[in-house]
Length: 349
Image 1 (cartoon, rainbow, N blue to C red):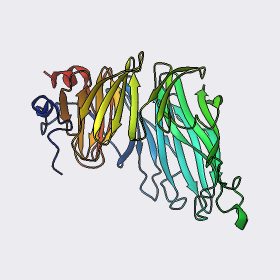
Image 2 (image 1 turned 120 degrees about the vertical axis):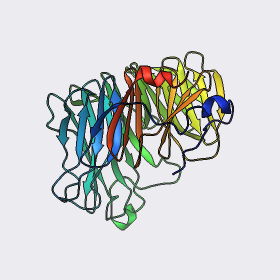
Image 3 (image 1 turned 60 degrees about the vertical axis):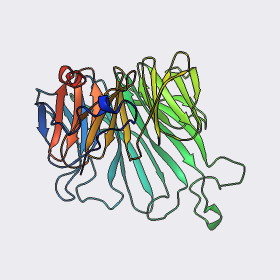
Image 4 (image 1 turned 180 degrees about the horizontal axis):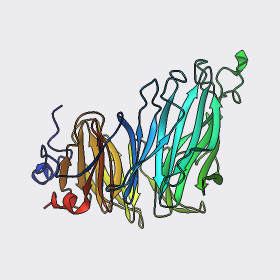
């Protein structure tokens, strides 16, 4: 696949400088299968490695470059269940990893699990189910949107109304005109491996990012920045065309289909807006003023205060990326790789 020379239309010379270059030498970790999800916190990374559908179950691999990895074995991906098996969420905070397994038959089962490198045996945090399996009924209970940073690990739960209650399904209350489709919204925090309720309210369903003891919640056209107590720090009216939002310190970065916008979290003002060329991309991280986007098989780093950019090419397969103060973690068909921060910053010079 041809790697795009630039993601941002402005400052195209600065942004295109490193495109097509080979990443510098980095620590690597081959994995037993393809990496489907990647999270990192500090010097530690967590990766979901898909099972082979037979004897090897899906794994959550905890890796600190220079150290032997720790493998956590899940209950999915090894031929014990059906097509609903999978892992659809991953978060890492401190030494604790959080992930969500999916399984079931007529019903879709969602199980949030946790483990640490010292205690790699999975522990159930939450279990819910709904009719969105073979039954084809979206009504019922859900969990998802797992995020973490340091000691703050969060996820959401909610109930979706049942459009088929009149036919006797009864997974949730009937869907009715004038009533929200989603209700019983709860924002959960995992403390010491146990589930605690942080906030309740249908307008607080989906956390979008966490950092530095704060939580960003996305609800319709608004982004709300919360303390861990649930107190609102600031609300941003960003419109409905937001694809993803991340924040760190005083910077909030919002990805839209045509722009990458930067806001000041202390004032709420938009400070920069960079036009984007038309292509599919994912905003996956923000660290030290550098936004991390994945475009096809390329990892694009953009300094949000200047628009300068650098490109890394991890290799074939589905690419994941996370940027920490220690450096850049990436995944490819070959496994995991790590580039120290000094080498990352050198690419901008």
